[in-house]
Image (cartoon, rainbow, N blue to C red):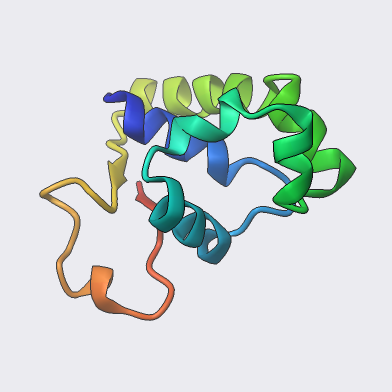
Amino acid sequence: MDQFTFDLMALTLVPGLGARRIHRFLGEIGDPGEIFRFSRRQLGKLRLGPEGMAAVAGGLCRRQAEKAIETARSSGVKLVSFRDPSYPQLLGRIFDPPLILY
C-alpha cells in the first residue's frame, strides 16, 4: 500500500473529519499526510474539536489505520483510494465520493 492511501485511511479515522472535509483539505494541501505534520495551532484552525485534535496529534488515527489495513490485508480485502486507477470512474464523479473502497 502506498503512503497516500495509508494517510488517507488515517484521515478517515479522525473524529469529526468527514469525507467532504477531507476532499476539501486535499484540494488545498494535496498530501493527506501533511495534516500529521501540523502543529496544534494549525490543527486548531481545522476545527477538528478536542477529540479529533488528540487523535491526530497523539497518533491514534494512524495506529487505528495500521490495524484496519492489517485486518483488511489478512482477510484478503484490497483498499482502493479515489486516486487509484482501479477506482470506478463514475463513482468518482458523484457529489461526495468515498475516499476509500474496500
